[in-house]
Length: 325
Image (cartoon, rainbow, N blue to C red; front, side):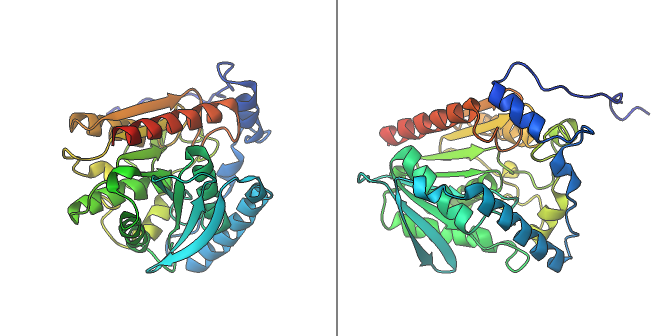
């Protein structure tokens, strides 16, 4: 029996249909043998907690190198607070605003906290010219699910004490998109007022990895060339991966779910996550806009013009939704 399409070995070229800067990024992230550099890094087994701690330390060093000097370029001022068990980096823009943006960092649910999260909050405050709360949520192996989502809920309740729900936007990239969508589903289940809008950038909303792009874009995505099932199992810690708080794609998007901005790229491993969630929202009559960028891998092109175009699209969507509130 035929179970799928058999592909012949071939090299997928860098397309000429994207900016020279984006082309350079795709070329830079692939070795001379044609294998994405990120594909050379093996993930530890879910139960190898020491291995995960070593990898987290190595990734933190990488983030520190990438983020060097960026804090000084921020216009927003930064301070850090504690909300229950959550560490929250609060970025305040130069001009006062009644609006708030809750930012949830990416990193496969196990990386990306600390200074990386703090700088990301400052960037969101600068982009939207509003107060930003960057949730430095707890992560495994020490703090598996539901610790991160609990931190998001605690922070959302805190923000609701200072801002009307219709003045709040929640956003996240990758793993942050997972938590942003799960946060809204859980907030609704707990009877909390929902935010004005949701921004999901290449969201990791299906930890079962059931979508087509997990096969079609495997290795083609130079940022995220391989699936993350080991990471997902570490995070879930035995919980059912199909539960909507773990895989929001399988949630109930009843009327009242906020308008949502979704973004992915044609080379993104999470493309199926994004387009399937867009369809689920549309079927539930939730206003949702989908932006798919040509040849973009997971997380963008690292500073190419397409990334600035995406940021402008997000800023316009956020501004429009808040004005409606």
